Image (cartoon, rainbow, N blue to C red; front, side):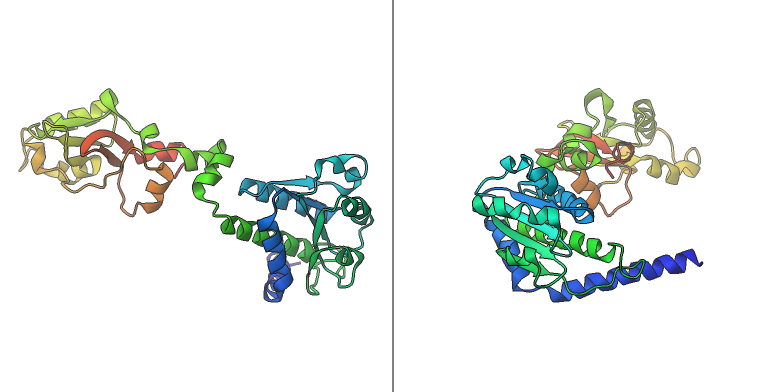
Length: 320
């Protein structure tokens, strides 16, 4: 077996299934999106087996982007977990056959509670479709293993449909990156969305600065003593005039003692138009917008230098 070729064929079949479903989106799919958008309660996602695993992921995605949601295991639902559902909720059921016993067993109780049911199924005229307020029917697609028996393309399609629903509803609700940060306070993702320049900048005694009257030698010494990749040059009002980096030093190193004296004024060698940032900016946004290869960034507030942001610190924290 050619493993790479065989795997490529599997992926291409699943891609083909996704394209087919994408082309089949209709008014029922739009109704599902609008019903979830207008839901005053939470979205209760349910499904059994592989569809259940997909449902858990979709519910988790919804919760993470501002759509209150829980996953309800259908077998547990009929043994008391239906208590977590109320009349303002909306049930989103996944069942490729539309005839999954465990999912259908929940319907009588939901109907008594007057909870609306929407569903995603793969077979037309199924029992689940008949009991659903709105149902999107996945067009006939081909599974990729054992003569169409193993749920593969169908679960991929369900997952993608769930993502499409969740992201569209979240967009309709005006969910923003700042909202996302509130729900993800920990881990690298949360840090990217909450860490400001002020939280990471080197300031005070930890910052490398000299005045515009300093010599080249004094600037190099300050940079080395503070262990930074550059030094900021300021005037007597602490206003930034320029920067001198280790890159600048490398460029002139061969000329030092030949045509350049260490007693030369640093003002003559600094970069006068450096890239600058403000303390309240997100580090994530800084890195995303940075289109120059720089080692550090002066931090300016109200026209004055308040610190230096090192690119190496950002990379070390995994925020680049």
